[in-house]
Image (cartoon, rainbow, N blue to C red; front, side):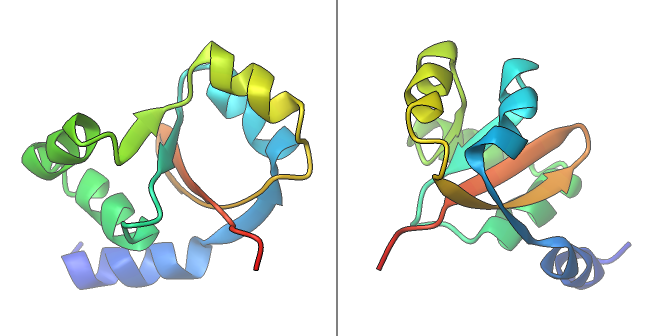
Amino acid sequence: MEMDDVRDKLEKELNTVEWPALKPHAERGALFLLSQKNDLVEVGARVAADDKAYIQALLEANQLQRVEPEQIKSLDQSPSTTFVFVIVQPYVFAQEVLKQ
């Protein structure tokens, strides 16, 4: 599948949920949070394309982070926190929806 096709597919699959829907993915170590600086669809497409250098750079810059147990506890205190997310099997990538 071409990169543009992957982006189009992921764009259509973007969804919004509150924290409790993502918690099971965090508990199995499959949820990654993306900083607001980055485009969620672009990151998903790069993961699907196995662009290791790009993903490694995001991880090293702390712009992409696996949700750790301490973060799960913190997010449990704010269950109405809303995220936009996309699934790139076996992972889930999410960005918090900032309140205006």
